[in-house]
Length: 150
Length: 100
Image (cartoon, each protein chain N blue to C red):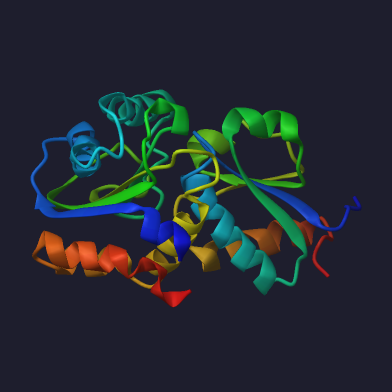
């Protein structure tokens, strides 16, 4: 899919973090390192959860961190991290979190295909597959395969 | 109460482009299973107030402040749970006579 070939995809497995803020930072870090997002974007991802609550924990064990295009996105991007120790976001039903995705979209539309494909792969067990792999490279391959079903 | 075709559905989250987009896909699948023709849009919680809809779906931390905005407001914790959402939609739409 076109969006996927344009997107910066990064993955880190078995990351150690102290709390949910550190988990969001860790998920954003490879995108920051790649120049896909700016530092202020990471802060906005955290502020949104502080302001709105932990709704980004959208399924058991799974969080999707992001902010808005105007918060500092240079390229369409998606990262996945798995956590060595699960952390609590304060969600009433879906804690603790073991897999955190972070994405950035440079406009209101460019991420739609990428997230559509991601949702389909999560339905098919992507979070389980991510937790099972032991290297960043294997995890990144799983992300690269997101669009293969289309 | 009668309704227009298609059913107007909003999936809501804090920003309106991530979690709500994932939920939109789950909702579209569930509504398709139920044979309901629907237009599903993902939006943020503050826009949802002014958009008007037949059905609003989101996490409890958002739907709590949207009660009364639409005839049907559904709270779901797991945005990937199509079966659970389908069951809630079937019950609530059925109560209103909105299932064919």
